[in-house]
Length: 325
Image 1 (tube, rainbow, N blue to C red):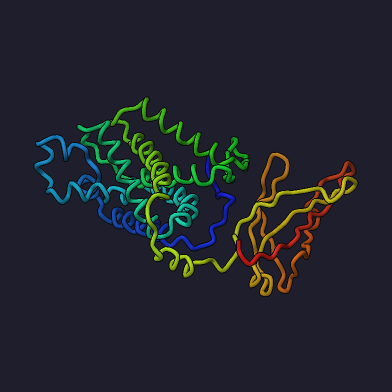
Image 2 (cartoon, rainbow, N blue to C red):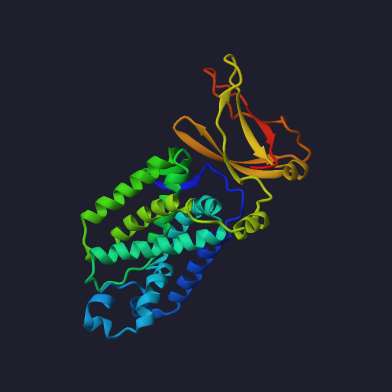
């Protein structure tokens, strides 16, 4: 299952999420330039439990390096697909969780999730001399928080069936629940030599859930509210999911709704929409003309139902202008 995006638009620009993605990417590009020296680099800044438990290993590392590695390991990756997968999941789930916590709290939440995932991995593999690297544990914390905060959200998911891409909306609690169960069973069925720190994923997910529960008990400052006003989005979501209805029982036409904000209504805009139809969910680029009014309709010719004679109806999208999305 490959998540494409969720159905809850964030009202603010997730500056911490984007910054984390940029920092991870820069560190990975630096790793690529290191050539054969990258292995010792990963051992130095990756999280290695044996640094803390085996004297013959600990002797090669300073006190500061041992504890810096508990954080630095989160920004290292073992290959292109490793970082692409991690950054994509952070992109999908990070914006809404950051909006909930606020930028500053989210930064702390992310780091604490990564630390918690490393600690669980350490407790279950204390003698491991294999470097643990990657943002997976911290991102698992983000996913755990999303699981609690937005269980009824839908995750637009790509399920490849041989060569046919099948798009389906899966409730967040189901998508993330399945993901967590897979991590748990992988963790119980493998050992540290497998090369994947499955228990780190489990630990991060659980830490995210716990910190969401604790967040309401901690005092808040006005700093995050100020940042939210600065980072408020000026545009409506670029990708929207259109839920279809029949215009009437005796027509082939379909209807749906598309949301824009007042500025987009004046200037016009283009949106990528996902339109469910049959077993497929198809992506289309929709142009919203400038000067459109609230309640106005956009006609998409030939995108309605097909009749028995082969004729096709139209799809009508009703424009909803919302000042806050």
